Image 1: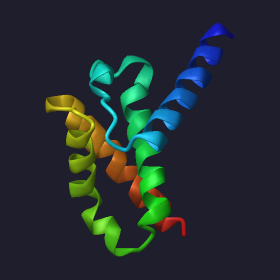
Image 2: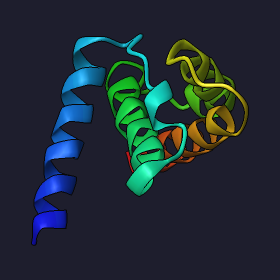
Image 3: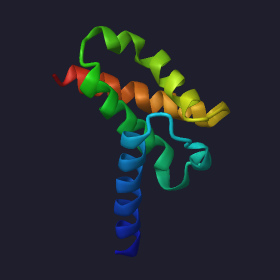
Image 4: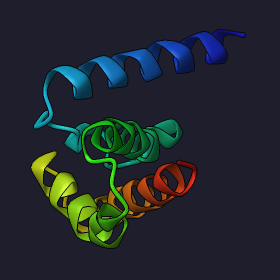
Length: 97
């Protein structure tokens, strides 16, 4: 149960941080501890889709995901992981609508 509480708290902190500061530094998540890097990308993509909810963004999502990764101070594999999860989340959300 402690892990669940930690995960819930960490999730809320990520939502809060990304919502308040779209350029926040996520480089501390580069080890992808507890899957937080992919969760951050999914949260970021959900916020992005709320303001960019049009089919043409599906084709641009892979590039936008990389741009967001760089904006969050991610490089190398961390940037690619972020890009992948951002892209797949945007695709899923736009297809569902």
